[in-house]
Amino acid sequence: MFGTVSETKNNLLAEVNLPSTFESLFLDRLNTADHRYIKDLKINVSNALKAQTLKEKEAILLALSVAINEKSSTLITALEELAKSKGAEEKELLEVASCVSLMNANNVLYRFRHFMDKESYNNIPAGVRMSIMMNPVLGKEFFELLSLVISAINGCEMCVTSHEASVKSHGATEQRIFDAVRLGAVIKSFITLL
Image 1: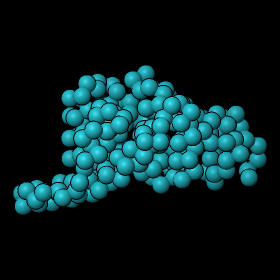
Image 2: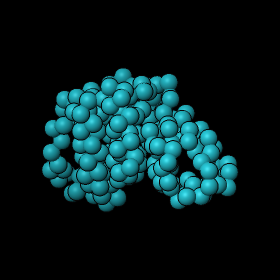
Image 3: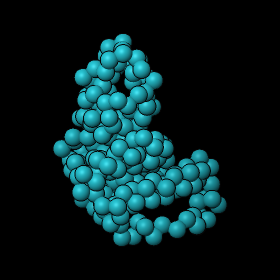
Image 4: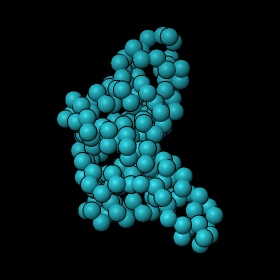
């Protein structure tokens, strides 16, 4: 599309299982210009996916949750294939998608409560069924970590606070939490250029 594909772009695409032939208006323009940001983005994606506190499959599933949240169908397909190659089962992939869907409902509802800051709204039962949270196939700690990342991306302060406390209560360190949220932020920034 815009000239030859650089090694940096190839490596960036390989990190998320996209083919070197993948075309993207902004990635290709950055590549053609040999712009320093494409190098930064490759390093950011690589470092975020390889955080020491996250297992490889966990990092890929977190990235997948962001792709689902941001409705990036190309990246969803690529990350699902990559997750399967790292041992993810269909029920785990479906749980990631279900978690993202549930968090989107909760994030809207609880952001509304936070914005309104009225006791009357806070006392009304949420009325959103959340049985998936009770016994997740990915384990409670990781499900809460997924919930936290999506809530951070969606900007729900109440949900972020609640899920951060829950993840910690299930044994996660603050470094693991930070690494997961950073991964979510970096993948969202990558998707912006797809």
